[in-house]
Image 1 (cartoon, one colour):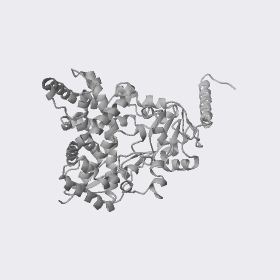
Image 2: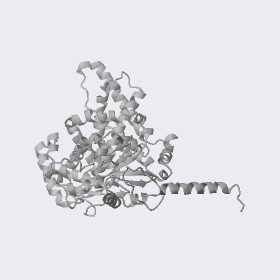
Image 3: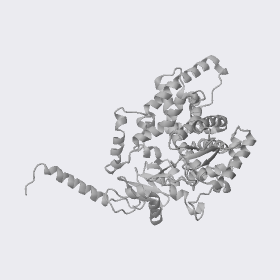
Image 4: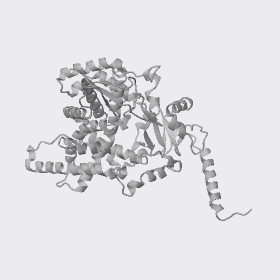
Amino acid sequence: MYFSFETIPAFVWAFVTTYVIYWIKNLRISRNEPPMVPYKFPIIGHTLDYLFNADKFLAECRQKYGDPFNLYVFGQVTTIAGNEIAHEIFRTDTFSMTSATRDTFPLYLIIKSLDDPETIERMIKTIREGITTKLSLYTGRMQKQLMIAINKEIGDCSDPKLVITAKENFSRMVSRPVTDVLVGQEMSKNEDVIKAFADFTKDFTAIVGLPPILSFIHPKVHSHVITLPLRFGWNPIAKHIITVKKNLKPVLEKRLKDKKILGDKYEPPLDIIEYLMNKPEYETKVITDDYLNEICELIFIIVVASIHTTSRHLTSALYDFAGRPELWDDIYEEQVRIDKECNGELTSQHINKMVKLDSFLRESLRTFDAVTAVPHRCLETFTLKNGMTIPKGRIVQTSLMDIHYNTTAYGPEPRSFLPYHGLENNFSASRTDKNYFIFGSGRHACPGRFFAVNEIKICMHKIILNYHIKTPSGKIEKKVQVGPFVSPPVAGLIFENRKK
């Protein structure tokens, strides 16, 4: 038999392919690891079930293999942690969400300071000290900004109006009060800045949102390919940062000048840029480009963590309300009573009295229907209380369905919408517990959840007071499910002015 020189590469590739398939088919994990769910297809593993049947598939795996278990998805072993194990993951610093999302959401290529491990801690501290502890002081400004947004994005609906929610209108609605709190009341009047904040995360996700097909070769291959445009200088996100820097510079310069002239008589504005300027690490006598970059990078990290997620949950909550006419009168009456008490000017005390709306929102968040979320990477080999070991480098995904739809907490029909479950059990929408994981848990719980919940409640309060809301079908609209991820429905919402 004659072999030409050209046939040698073919044999080499055939050998490599056969070896890879054999290796994956005989994938071994250590004795103390969570059990590996068997799969039929080499290389592909559980990927198809994870993409097209995630909810049912993970529930079956949980029932058969317990908590946690291992899957082989997109070329790597992933551990799925459910109701029993996820809390251990979140209560230790051995697991890092920042590390887990670095390859799939490489924001560090845009925001360079994310390479510094202290950046996230600085961001969390900024939110807690600069926003959460002063939340009551922001309430009036949030209300004002949200009313501007509602009038702009929904407006007069003397005749029923269909608002297509898949557009950016709800992102801009959420962006207005966030802009006010982050960069001040002066900047909150600037439509370009509001749009920059509203579009930043969406535009970045559009760049890196390709399915991780190349991860079958190696996760790093996918990461390098999706970021090639950014590495070679194509950066459509930079325009948003440039917009904010251009408008922020004169504001910061004016504040420095006013401080110098007024001295002790200077009245510091209440916002995050003022909070940062008063921190020793951000002290300056001149606003340089490097200083602007430092301020703006931290601001945009907060934007990524807030606007996109909050706008999605606001939109979903409005759909949940619009599709359930049996709840309309009860929740509307509560908003009317509170509106009369505060004479249209909400305070934090009045927001706390929205107990039915709060309970409804908690249930909307619980039933958002994302199957898995908040991945964490194991930084050092970790032994769980049950004796199982998570090896260094392993990605652990949280099975939200196992947590949010467990019968112990939510009764024999946990997938039912239970609007007053929170009210009956004294659980607020912003409170984390072992059966409610939308904001994480323990040390890794979302620090901005109190602001996000208040913002959604104020917005819904004003919308429900001013409009009748319904879905085009008159029924509950289905959310958009893509693999284990979910987005709000896209059918649109019909708004009609309430008769005063």
